[in-house]
Image 1 (cartoon, one colour):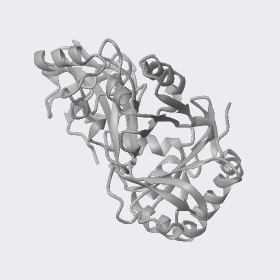
Image 2 (cartoon, helix red, strand yellow):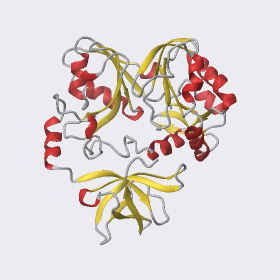
Image 3 (cartoon, one colour):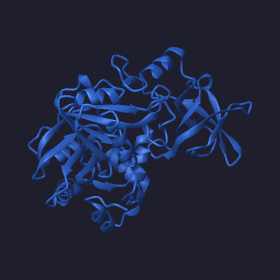
Image 4 (spheres, helix red, strand yellow):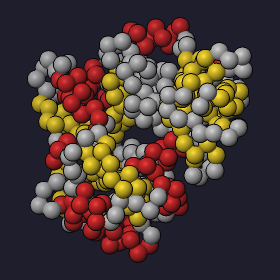
Length: 361
């Protein structure tokens, strides 16, 4: 297993560790529920250094990004970021990702999922016919996500950059916690506000940043948070998780990602997705809330009242902020309307649930 710049910090703090995407990662410290509430009410620190980062440079960098992503990256100017996906040849999703515009038309950073680093690199490279300069900086890049309503208040103490007024999906670059060339962005995955801190992992930068972050935030209740609470937080917001809610067999239109699928440019599988939009999708990713007792889990089958299979659960949990069991699921379009009753098959028993609006929180 690979380590992050913070692995020894997690172990020293007594975190429950487990393998995730080839990395030794903290799943929880004090417990998922407690950590979840810390982020919703105060602030927490996630080590997400396992994520992948690619730099694309050169006069044709934007053309390559436009060719392989579904969103319109030509709209990006310096200091702005964008959520997007990489469609595959059949209209499925290779990965979802963030595109950061470092220098408009010339330099971009792509942030991809940890489990897909090699896959994404190979996919993008296969379209690089104009010799765009590509650098995989994943192994030398550290990343902390400091999330929660008080996160920015704490982190502003560590930099002269204005992060207090950082708008959603923008970023700044400068000195943070005494470390130069740090990117601080606002592209969070929890719905609780906060920032992400990207830095080059050299000369003890990770340890310095970690220690400074907890020096200013720790006395006020800032705590380290594991991947378990990251999952419950993102699910309450209805944010997709690659491998659960989206994958190579699901289209962005089925997943409710039509808003990042722009037909104003040419991109992989555009014709397939355009036809899908015109004809209408046959299934849809929806929110579900349990009415009867039970927790929906990934892969559970879903039936209608007559016992006909109409879909399957993609993600599910007991939502700490809501005190109820929720999930997301692909369901046949004719049963996907808000308020529709559906039945989750839990241990061969049909348990009643209802289609609800996303986000849940």
